[in-house]
Every structure is written in C-alpha cells, then in structure tokens.
Length: 149
Image (cartoon, rainbow, N blue to C red; front, side):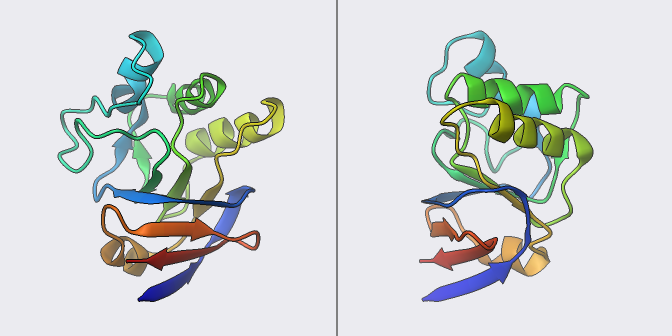
C-alpha cells in the first residue's frame, strides 16, 4: 500500500530510505551529541526524553517528526552532522520547520559538496499518524513524499 503527502521543500533532493518516527519534538543537540562529540558513526539518538528515538540509529533514516526543540545550537548541530556524514537520509516535518533547523539544513545543502539531506515540512498531522518505523519513504523532486509499507 502506498500513500502520498505533499509538503514544502526546505532543502531540495530525492532519496528513498526507511522511516524513523518521532511523535515528540527532536532535541537536536541531545539527539546528535554522541555522533558529533564521541565518534558514534551511526548517529544513535542520545535524547533520553524522546522514547520514540532514544537508542535508535538515525544515520541513513527518513527522520519523521513534528518539529525540532531545544537549544539554539540546533541549526549548527544539523550542519555539523551533515559535514561529518552522520545525518539522516532526510528530515520530514509534519509542522512548519523552525528557523534554526531550516538554517542548518539549507546551509548544509548549499555549502557542503556531495551532501544530500532533503528536508520537507508542512506535511500535516495525517502524515505523522500514518507513517511507522521501517516503512519505505521516497521524496520526489517536487516535494511529494511517498510512504509505502
């Protein structure tokens, strides 16, 4: 079964990856700290306050979430994760993206050669309620997100 959702392109690109779903906000710094400071190449989520993601590998996953939360370092954390090759395959927001996460992902797409982390926001609550861990997610060039189980 397949379902399509239309969002707004924040950082362009196409990708297909398995879904990793968070129903709470992603604390960017807490989630990526192990990957950036302690050499965790699989980007294992370190945010103990996020039961959906804690202890799960974020590298190469289609990270599905409502929004990011936490520190004003959020944009820099996303940029650094991309620069170190420890980013999710893509980020898909049910809500409009915040300015910090937008800045980090846009700067990574513009400044970093060969980095592809498409970001689409405003996909809606129906998207976040529908998608489950492990479903196949494909982002098309026009920002359409295809979810298959």
